[in-house]
Image (cartoon, rainbow, N blue to C red; front, top):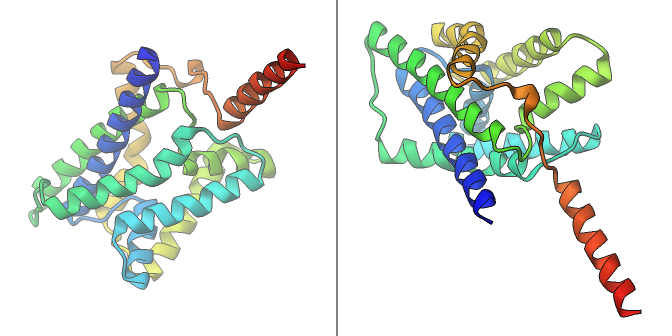
Length: 223
């Protein structure tokens, strides 16, 4: 039980930090990451907050992941819900400052990337499944037999274009986050000595299988 509590604490710390990094990029006013451009664009069209738009997009992606046969963890579902909730809380509370000058804004984006790197370390390391968008990348890589880099770039270019057409904010910050994001993640992972390939995830299917097995043994014991 103690391990479960610690893992869930780690999971939700990661979600909060991820939302914080996103809000820092939004308030920097230099453009945001491709997926957030899409969320912002959908939010503009549907007249909903960017957090709610993030939840809506995440829900659709989870359904696509399931359709493609990807394993879904509780962390995948919670990621879909709580990152969006935390984004809205941070936006409403005005905790994160807004900048209009170029260099302070650029610095805030770079710090935000570091924070997002730590966020991934926390929530991926908890072992409850990857985020919906990462799951989509994995599913399409398997389906198309193309490289991860090609699939990731294709997805991000597509959502960026759609988000821009819907009114999302695109600027130099978008380019910085798209190009530098991977390097910042690598820096943070090396800093904390974290290897994503060594994380063993527990999926919802595993828990359902465990419950089914327990019920089977119980029924057999009663016979």
